Image (cartoon, rainbow, N blue to C red; front, side, top):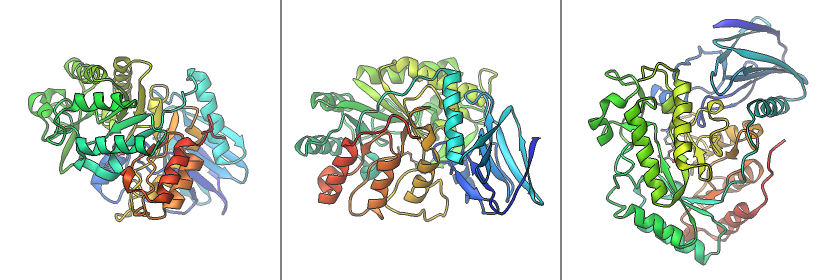
Length: 437
Ligand code: 9PG
C-alpha cells in the first residue's frame, strides 16, 4: 500500500466505496459511519474480495473510491479497470483522511455530487476502452426466486404455459440453479430434469428464447469435475477455497488450463446446440481469485480470459448476464450485470450482512451503481418478485422501475394476486432509459 493522497475533512465529509463484485456492498457513508463488512468468514469468501480485509474503521473501494466535501468530489479510480483493480483504502488521521492504494490509480477532481462524478468517469472509461453502448435487454422469467434448487422441469413448463395464458411480454425463459446434478457438472442433469435438451426445445417451440444458469468458474466438492480433474483447480494441490454453498466446499476452475478451457468450450457449445442463447453466468468471482494457475497471470487476467472464452463460444448474438461478478474487470464483455445481492422475501438479512439476500442490500447497491447502466452494460437490479409474501413489495417494484435495466420476473406466475400480476406486467412493459444520468 502506498499513500496517494491526504484530504482535509469536515463534519460533512462523505466517502463512497465501490464493492468488488455484484453482491459486495457498495454505497456512501458520512465519515465516521461504520462501513458494511462481512459478518463471518464464509460470507467474506463468497461475497467480498478475498485479498482485502480492511481493518475496522477503514473505508475501502475496489478500483473506485470517492470523497465528497460539499460539491467538491475527489475520485480515485483504477487507471486500467479491466486489467488491474487496486484496493483503495482511506484511514482517518485527526481531521485528515489518508488514502492509499496497491496499484495504479487516477485522481480526479469533480464539481457536483458523487453520482455525477462516477457517471463522468464511466463515460470516459467507455470512450477510452471503446465500449459500445449495450443492446436493450430481452425481458425474462427466471426460476430461482420461487423454486430455488428444488425446481423441476414441470415447474418450468407450468410457467411457460402461464405466461402464454396471461399474455405476459416475456422473451426469455431462464432455467436457474437446480437442473444440474452438481455445481461444475453442467451437462449432467439432476433427477428433476429427465430431458434437459427436450425442455429447451419445448421453450423455443412456445416462441420464447431459452436461457440457462451456470457457475462456470466454480467446482464443487461433490462434483465429478473435481473427482476427475483435480488439476484444473486454482491452487493445484492446495486448491483455493472460494466459499461454501449447497452444503459443500467450493473451489475455482483454472481458466488458463488448456483442458479446463476445452471443458468450458464443450459446455457452452452443447448449450448452443440445445438452442440456448441467453446465459446467466454466476459466482464468476471464483475465476478471479489470486492463486497458482497453469499460466502465470493475475487472477483478473485469468478471469477476463475465461469470460472472453465464453463470449467467443456463445457468439456475439447470445445474451450474457454476469452475476457474482467482479464489476470493473467485466466491462466490455457482458451484456448485462447483476449489480446487487439477491432479492429475498425478507426486507433485511437475518445475518445482518448486507451482501446476503434481502431487499435492503439489493436496493443499496442498485442505487449506488446506477451510473453503470447503459455505459458498461445493462444493470440487472435482480428479479421482479411481486407476490404477497414479499415484504415491502411496493418498494421493491418501485426500485426496479427507477433503477432496473434488465427486467425478469421470478414468481410462480399463476400464484400472483392482481396487484402482483399488474405490477409484473407493467415492469416488463415499461420503457427503460438507455442510460441513467
Ligand atoms: C443460484 C443463485 C441465483 C441467484 C444468484 C446466486 O452468499 N451466498 O451464499 C449466496 C448464495 C447464492 C446467491 C448469492 C449469494 O445467489 O445471485 O440469482 O442464481 O445464485 O444458486
